Length: 316
Image (cartoon, rainbow, N blue to C red):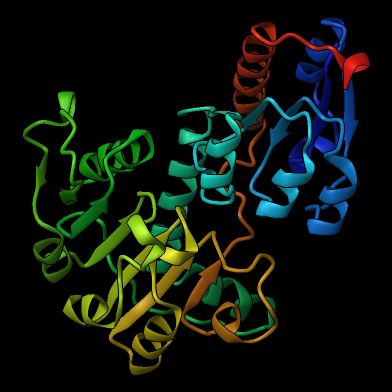
């Protein structure tokens, strides 16, 4: 049968029961170094002879795909394909499947947590009390605030729903303008420039623009109201880092809450150490329920794709 590579950190450190379905189907399961994101050298050593790959957010180079001589399918345990060299994958005819919506609740809840932490200065309050101080920093409320959601997919819609229930005026930008359903009348679509010029809080839930350019460069960040909060649980490249640091240094941006960096983990200093940054270590989908759902969907997608493939390893 097939040889299947497992590389997401959340699955190699403590392999969940959902992976047993692969073994029960007769497939051989191969793991990278447990609990660590594999680098290119490790991937190059692992991918030869692999038929299926349950992949996470680890960067995959064109060289790795070239070395994967038998690879038929890559099953992501998330939604994005930014870490994959799609032109090379498509040229090889390798199928890519995604666990759409599986981690939406976890990521949405983290985005809301970052927004609330920024509004109420929770990291500074906690650190001050831990140091024996009694900081009392004036915060801001969600009720009555204008909040902009960029990207109205499964995650963005959840964030918009909760913030609307909390009394925020929610505006959204999405070039596809999906039907708002139950959010109609509570969320309004606007252009990106209008969203940035009006929103006191902006939360990003969208893919990278074509060509890989930042969605928010210096000019776009300059449109934000003074003292705005920006939250990014999507992709680090959506925001130009140099322009972001400049906006934070100038106080134009009050807080940047982020779950994503480029590279990961980030180098010491720089953006990750900025006093106006509230950062988490790409944990949006790292909840018991999200990992379970994403793994189950990724395994199901992998098994379905492999069922359509004929393996003749003896002939290779």
